[in-house]
Length: 284
Length: 340
Image (tube, chains in turn red, green):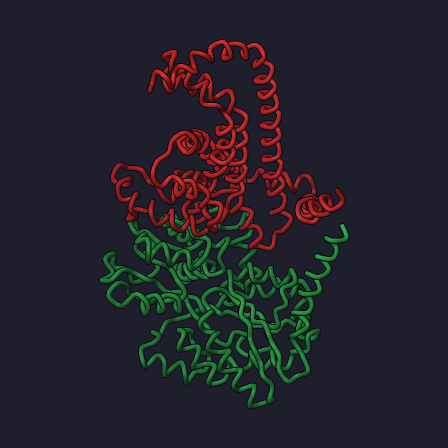
């Protein structure tokens, strides 16, 4: 216990409390002026919306990837499984440079998008692409183990009763996966919200347009304006904390809902089990 | 808990041992030069030459370590405790910041000759081969349909030189009319599609991504880009007038006094102004202060003659320029606020 507290204090609590202390050197009116300046507000909107979109994309496609990895076997599966973690391992600046090279006007993907009028690099879309990239592993890696725990027989039972793939997903998988999807979404969002390295290469960094909050913080540090920078950092910290807290609540609520519902529904799958057990037999 | 304390104590003692190695009595010493990004190759050569010279002079073996990064970031590292014996940064403003943290004595810029900047550079244009948009001077950059690549002056020291060079050009042309200069720089930044955070990023955007018609760059970077990617791809255009960029050098008093490296650190910076040091600067496309060596380099075609104005003449020094143009709510912010 002592070790844990010391460890967390040295690495998390003390550094983060420095943000509060540094900010406290400013008057409340000054803090307000910093965080409501047009550039700061525009960048917060930009960071917030792009992170939400990226986390949303990751929630949808992360579940899909996890589903494929858990339920199907195909040649090269272990390679695909390892690929998911790459955004974790790679320095984000490398990811950003690579993404920019591909999505810029003359890049492999960009050269097809630009003629269609889609500006994929140096735009808001570029920011979303970079943030989706860095957040990709979170949903996959939180959903995957939960999905592995789920028995296949419920799905097979539903299939034998004529449920389509989407219905199976919606009625059987989704309720069980919901908490882990939310967790993955929240982590993906938090990661994207604070991301700097990859975004500065692909966003174009235009003030009031594609400037993200971490960049505005960096510009303040570049002017030796530590207090102003930490005031903005404080806003980001609070935003992330409130969001994570809300999702935590939501999760425990949905967890409670699932577990309170299951006793009622539990007999049903049990009574249907013979049908489920027969299904493979029918198939073979 | 005790285990953790032991680990921490070990880690700390390992760190401090490394620091103390600086001025050992064994006749060898180590100094750290904290510099900005594009000087890496320059100082590799300077260090080797200086180590040889110092060995002859004092019989001591000296190793010079280098640290490179964005100029402002490097200054902050020194302020936060990076043990730099000397700093060689992109702007006096960054050295001023180290000085005001109490690490360098006041009046540092007058301690060495030539404003403490042993080599200089200026701001020029890099265009694509054949100069398809016919860019000759600063006023070509505000024309419609010309895409200009420059980094963000808020995050890049080099970009501040670019911005001030454009401002100074228009100010001279308009006979000192600040409003006209502001309008000119505003129109120039309207033509900028991407603001990278640093000078190297902008070079990549222009050279590798093929974005933009003209890159505003340090002369040494532009000449290096042409040298590396071949004369068949890019051309350097020198404008009619530009800014005298003076990257300053300074001994970090607090560190050298504590580590006992003052003599070597001072000799190291003085070496930059020697003939040998100046010739190395030319090799890396920095303009030497030594008039004879500069004239020789100009006649060899390394540099073109250009009218230069200094930041002190036009802007009243870095502190003032920074406050007026780049601080929050300054002219640069106003340009973007208006163009919303």
